[in-house]
Amino acid sequence: MSHITPVDLQQSGMKKVWSVTDFARRYRLDKDEENRLLQLLGSFASEQELLMNASRTARFR
Image 1 (cartoon, rainbow, N blue to C red):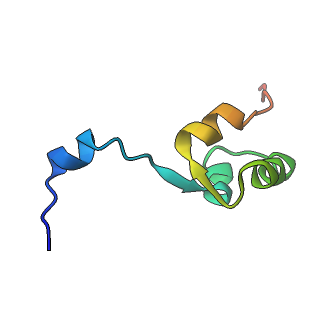
Image 2 (spheres, rainbow, N blue to C red):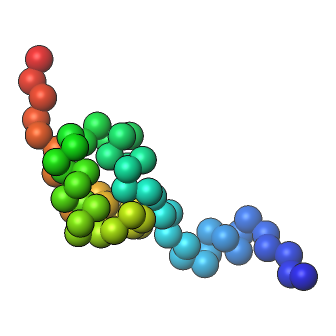
């Protein structure tokens, strides 16, 4: 069994992976945008992929 230190995790370049549904809920995306991301990326995607492909409509007060 090997031991991983926190420094090793930071240097390994691991990507944060999100569930597309959780990402849509957190960033308040509408259902159409969530479905578009699901078709484009599948059920799970990296945070970078989601941020680059998500589009939010402007909400004015």
